[in-house]
Length: 152
Ligand SMILES: CC(C)(COP(=O)(O)OP(=O)(O)OC[C@H]1O[C@@H](n2cnc3c(N)ncnc32)[C@H](O)[C@@H]1OP(=O)(O)O)[C@@H](O)C(=O)NCCC(=O)NCCS
Image (cartoon, rainbow, N blue to C red; front, side, top):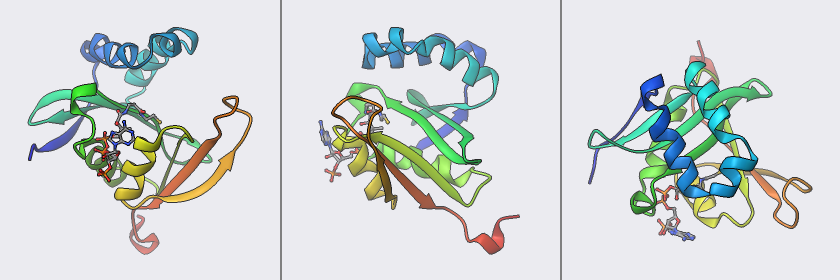
């Protein structure tokens, strides 16, 4: 089993991260201006490279914009590294470094792989929002990552 770790992305990682995103969906990459979003996330130190045995296999965007809670904005693994539990491990690592005792995220109803990955690492369903993507509701999940008493 590979050792999974995270490191904060630097401006030198921009092309790599943009590539991971572009390869997932060229259309979304362009329409949602994701290159700009990634550049800003790297600048704001909100982008983390996922490493498997020290080689980059994907990235996570993590911030506190969702009601001041830890929030996984986006996680993408290179296709050949999916389905091996790496996503779940990366999610647990990001939870460990969260400053809040709860971490939230969301995914489309059609994204069963992300839902399974979240459930496997202990995330609970938090609710459903209609109206974002037509015919594909957004499902929200959260995990309590720290005992409130040990928050500070
Ligand atoms: C979503 C993602 C981060 C999950 O990470 P991962 O390492 O692939 O997750 P896991 O290996 O824990 O797989 C989760 C489950 O999905 C299952 N799975 C694998 N391929 C699948 C597929 N094509 N459709 C549905 N489920 C699938 C796996 O079997 C696993 O379940 P199991 O362990 O019970 O067998 C990763 O797959 C990914 O980068 N996907 C593309 C980008 C994306 O959708 N990101 C989330 C946006 S919110």
